[in-house]
Image (cartoon, rainbow, N blue to C red):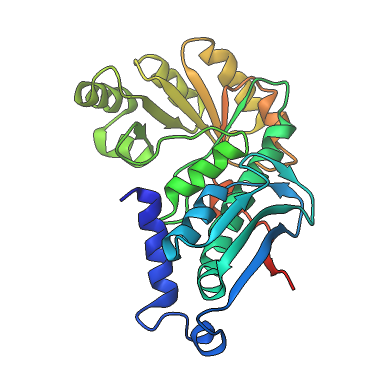
Length: 276
């Protein structure tokens, strides 16, 4: 079973428990068939179409799902993303889980795309963080890619990210990086979070791959980028909004990471309208 299937099955189990969809079972005869449009009720960037399709497939393989708009596509209010047709009971049972997942993913993609548009022409990449919805990380990160962003590490397992508490426990930055590199070898990315230029200078004396410039004002970011030169990949984080992201990008950093695109993005309003 794929990880996406695991997410969908957990969501369906949460919604249906052991009794199933009691409303649909009580109101809709077993033989009733229906069709409907999955419609975007607001403008944005679509993500999660294949996830929504899979929800319907897992509920009932007899439901037909026809796609008109794919992931990464921009839509206006009223755009038909897909149509569904088949047993009415199955469509109604799958509806909310499918719309919840696609609406969330499309919301993440939409907010990511807005940031990407703001930094166009600067060469800066917009990245996510690990501040994802528990249990939905794979979908959240897929949605960021659909919005034109890039993914940071997937979790604690695939890259080293040395933060203030790691440094405090290890003793200093140089020792922390040396120990990390010895443990993971040359092929795993090692990144260090710093709060000032003195810490950045310490990182530059190591073989770290990337430095995260945390909550620095724009003037300090410019100094940090100049100090780092071409020796290390620079990432800015903290205080990033649609209003500030362009100014941050123009400091010359390579990456801007933004937690709120996954932990606080509003859902794109997507609904299912049955045909008469």
